[in-house]
Length: 460
Image 1 (cartoon, rainbow, N blue to C red):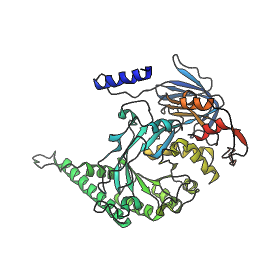
Image 2: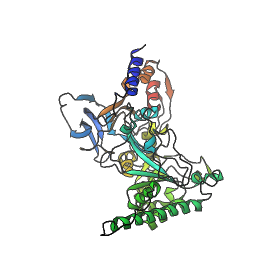
Image 3: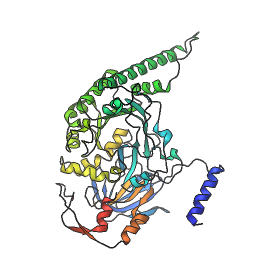
Image 4: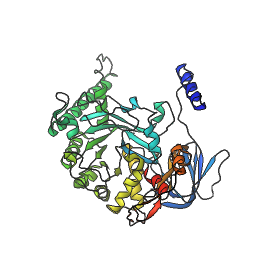
């Protein structure tokens, strides 16, 4: 029996006999030296150090000395950026739709996280330190979602959850919740039916909230003998949306439906709203900005079904220029590994500068999830979630080398067995075509490049 098998067997025995308690969130300390620090919100700092102590960024500057017992990472010639945040993912969930009813806000993806899912490690290999593990879009009002940190290596799903992150919920418009007539008696059969389902749920949530408010006010009255209203987790969740305690993230493609939900939310006083996919968001960018709604979009992915037939790669840039808090998301186990390349496309299609492009996968994602006071930029006091790149992350040659979550190195390319095997392969050459953006990054390139370097750049 190998040593690895012995360790696995020991862990299983201890777990089954009850000797392992619930895991605790691991916080680490590390000093990153001499990197080009892309803070995103505070500009670019050359030859700068970042000190993370007990999971938090404690110091940013030059010539910082490592405290006793704190390891050092030499980032000379490398780029240090905030950990990437994916605002739309299904990472860590094995089944994403509770499609038994048009309204299922009582279910919660946080109850079904799988910490052993290898996709979490693969996301780390792409510099992604956090993601939004979402319910699917089978329902007009789906389940509650979970913001997770990529603390891969734990067996406890509770450790994945980002403590203190605001609650979020999945809504959906269009073809997905109508089901094309396939789910009769369970779902609305038309787009107008979807609107009715949402209005009805909001109305029932308001009625439920009003009953509880009246009861709580009256129960302290002398001589009151009334009974409390019947408890309903479904209606309690709807009431929490109306109170502003839950952020709606709504699957939507078409401009007409985006406008519809904006109007419904205005009528019910709902202000926390982010649209997902938002392929026709460029058509209603001023309206989204006026409402204060966010938009999480694909860089250049559409036409995979009828209602997604029309979009433009300029979508993200148009939304940004109109003042909409915009993100580039993955909704994919593949795209999540190279979101930095997806963000870079907005420099070719829209001319966003470096900080604007990086914001689409960092601070803006944090804003949409309500966690921007903790992550999304490199600032003192924020969580020690960092990605270190060989070459600029917006370059086609950008390669995530080290990914740190809460000051703990969760991915190190130089120690990754798969990359070691790749490095041992004979060197070959490959021709690739490249454009150079206005900011000077090689978005593609013409010429002959080292095969191993190229593979390192695209495999994640």
